[in-house]
Length: 111
Image (cartoon, rainbow, N blue to C red):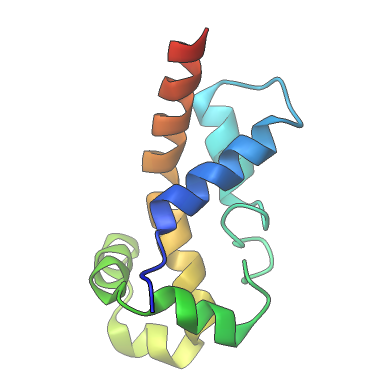
């Protein structure tokens, strides 16, 4: 099984989102994307809307999950109790600022 690349997938989702808006301000976009189901899944609590798919995404990404949980002040027990979709969304929210910065930098270089 190939490791799911969260960062690259989030960057792709951001690029798709940006096709629908002219906004390029980091702070405004961050706030919008943090609650976007199409990028983080944070609004509904699920990006995949599938526990199985969320579990597949998490495979081989447990170190990344650990980093994300620590960043947001959760422990592993809390995360396991909340389930795979919560863990998947947590990683997406954790990586959002990095992915957004990279996408905006790429766009600046294209202009």
